[in-house]
Length: 307
Image (cartoon, rainbow, N blue to C red):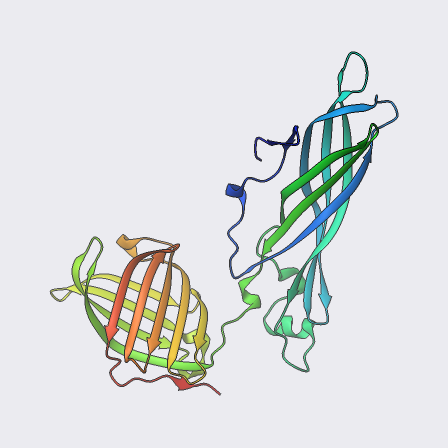
């Protein structure tokens, strides 16, 4: 939680610092909403002259998953806890505080690519999932912004902007094959970090026999006939397979790749362009490329259509 900042002479503590923001990935779903309140100072408290500090926190208290005609929703219930510290409208200008709690309810919408004629429960069952298998993480919440003002000596107006998010089970989005590409023994001479001058050999099977689960990418770096490093990527690491409409280009993305001395938990992208007769493999850490393998010559291999 941030240490707070001043807005209109009010210190606000509880707004998330940008460093706390999540990295939104392909499997992350979120919603944003506001909570508008009019807080009445309790009768036992004196009138307000000046609001000094607002301390605020948000907590998710429960979640439940429900079916919709086009997918599922995660219903999120929670509570805002807040303390208003103020200077009283009395001669001695004493400092007081008032505590407030406000419940909220929202939802995260998760549409699914359900085949025509199939219900959402049946589609989940076909993936080996149930309604309780939707999420891969807890539902999290952060406070993006707060606006607070004094309407009169006994009424405080407040608006809170909230961000709720969760990661989905990747099994909700199985790999599909619109095309297929296989090649063995594609080579390029490159300079690799740590290893120096090497020969890169690429063996690829993307949707062999139009089976996404049989996909693989194997990269071997060798020098003087000795294998120095092998990077093996199976279908469990592949997150996306995209084919152009005319089947001249193919792009494959993978995550969590172990590349030995080059690094672990890397991202991989492979782009095949049959028009240019090239294949380019890139290993990266976040957005920073670690290794690029540009291959010229696909040895006559082509991208074929999957029915």
